[in-house]
Each structure stands twice: as structure tokens, then as C-alpha cells.
Length: 77
Image 1 (cartoon, rainbow, N blue to C red):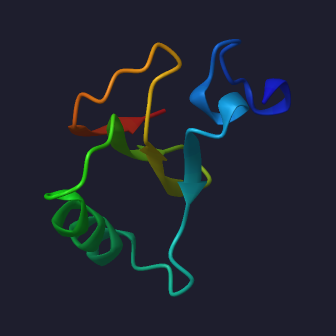
Image 2 (cartoon, helix red, strand yellow):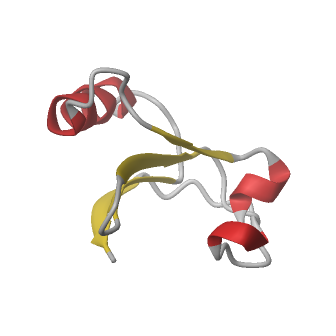
């Protein structure tokens, strides 16, 4: 977590979050699928994240505080 600049209370550290990428590299189609799939699920956040070198989908079931806010948004570095 620290090697990628993660925060000290990251949901990743508790097994509540994962960063994933589609094998075929089609991130826009993958994000559409994930958002559709999540409509009837309970989750905290789904974030499309981009850096200068990569993009990935962050899916978080719970925040470390137990929140499940059903937030979907994009972040770019």
C-alpha cells in the first residue's frame, strides 16, 4: 500500500477494496459492465482511476468506517 502512495487507512488494507483491469484493455466497456452489475449490489465506491501510465477500476465494498455509499465517479492523476 505504501509503495503505491496509498493512504494509511486504505480499505485495501482490510480486504474491502480491489483495483482491477479488464484483460482485453477495454476500460470503458468494462466500467459500463461494472456500473450495470453494481446497480442492485451494496457497495461503497466504484472509481475509474487514471494515471499517466495506466487506468484501473477501484471497487470498494466498505470504507474502513463501514460506509456503503454507492458512489460511482472518475479520478485522473
